[in-house]
Image 1 (cartoon, helix red, strand yellow):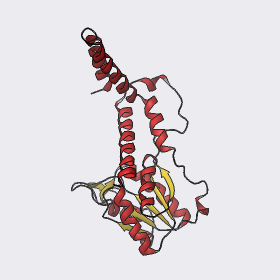
Image 2: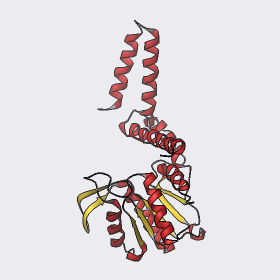
Image 3: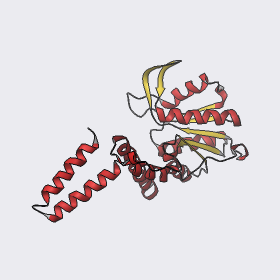
Length: 242
């Protein structure tokens, strides 16, 4: 259901409660205002932009001295027919993979695919990504697979093991821009200094105001939920080492 409907109902409830309890009406009114703001594109752009702009892609990646690209997973579906086999990546990891392939063609270094099968009905992401990379022309010897991880913490742990085994010391980390801060934090906890290469951006660096961005939208609320989840997960990682 559209969030605007709930905002109208909560506003009516706030007005009704003023007849019985000013404090309760004030509390509901404040909650309604916060909910409304979280449903607007205006707020969503600012909050998501705060996450996404923490890191920027290096201007001259050719001179960074990188020896491997780490591509973090973000979701796959196992039983959907793709161009060259069964199983496909979701939208976000597809965007990440496109960036990784373009970097690989410039730098001619291996891509380490990090991501296992999170649920029984989801795809084994690193394997699916590997198949896609091969279909895009990336040689077998330039593809490394890490298939055990099911979250960002494990991405870092298991990828670090492979990096040490292969004597790779200067990785480029490719993931969605909003996810990069937490990813860098997890890799640093494993003693791995990465070159952040954020991709899959969702908002502009310099968003402009438009009155339609004040309209409550489910898409804006979902974007803000993603922001709040990421902030919470980063805090848990930073303070509880989980």
